[in-house]
Image (cartoon, rainbow, N blue to C red; front, top):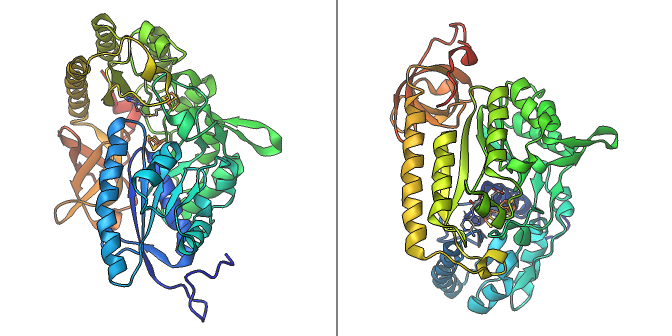
Length: 473
Ligand code: SAH
Ligand code: SF4
Ligand code: F3S
């Protein structure tokens, strides 16, 4: 690294404590892991609490209002901790990263001048240099440019193991500019990593023990990376290539946009058994008027047609989605169409939110803002329906035999925990030696957010999932 920072005279790195707190989406979780990777050569090792940490990084999310308020209250607490450490003759480097840093860098240094570093999502490969500058300079170091390609080129290759299930960012940014959303402003324009870089990172993750990889992107299915011979690969092609990696048992991807669900990707759901039968496909609303106001670029019928084609390709596919209630202009009749769409599709899971006006986005200044109480009432009604559907989906697994990827010990002695093909947590009795393997499990009970089951003899012929699996309701 050539920085010399944190090195003792004999060249060994001093041990330093790094506390990382992450809000927001899985891309932020992935980014936090990579920030830990770039700081490791300086001697920073992750710890579980901010007390006594030499460096604290808050990796923030700007998607809804509450997210940035949480940041400022956390910064208040850390100010005290930093003062106490300084009084004791030690220091604490305090950094704010992620999407709030990108959107409100100046606001952060104004409201919390004790912050040392403000860095946007595209600059974290430069963290070591920022830490060095922060320790020399008075005042905050601010880095919020967006040279996304560089970030990926500068990540250390020997990334720390993420465990049996791992995330891998293949795409960043968004060009879609939905009326309500900050992501195009905080993450910048769409960028896809070259296929060779993705495949190399996937092989490293598998060598470090990963058996399931979730490809990440703000618009992951808009992926259009450089493939061999300069050809452009879509996500379907990339998934087929990843599925060839020995010992990589399972693939997933998130988050997709209905508009980018192309034929080849749909066909991959039919052709690639490692691609799990569970897809997060945000629709936001069931009303064409609201979808147009949101600038989503598709109608409710077009969404339903995509769902139908996906289910034809993979009959056991279950879906989850995102919804917003009370987007400006949404009437009771529009909301009824959202409920109707939910009834029609039948989701296995979902995230739903009250519309939250974000400064600088078109919807924030739009007329016909929906009163808070109305947004809330619609959200409650929607969530009740979605919860019912999730519980029904979980119950529909009872009696099925399915492959479960064991990911760790369970809550009770003798228990192990894993994931179903539909991402449901599964608890069962079994030896810890099986962790990391996919084992046949008969599901005995369903709970609101998980399943429990019985481990079947491993040498029994693995039952065919598709043969036994009814299509979700
Ligand atoms: N790229 C994804 C979603 C990214 S943000 C997509 O296109 O669907 C994750 C979810 O947060 C969105 O799907 C949306 O449901 C919600 N969201 C984003 N901005 C919001 C806002 N201003 N108010 C409420 N929910 C919002
Ligand atoms: Fe936001 Fe829309 Fe882009 Fe998703 S597609 S990240 S909701 S602007
Ligand atoms: Fe939040 Fe940024 Fe992700 S705003 S949802 S952390 S892309």
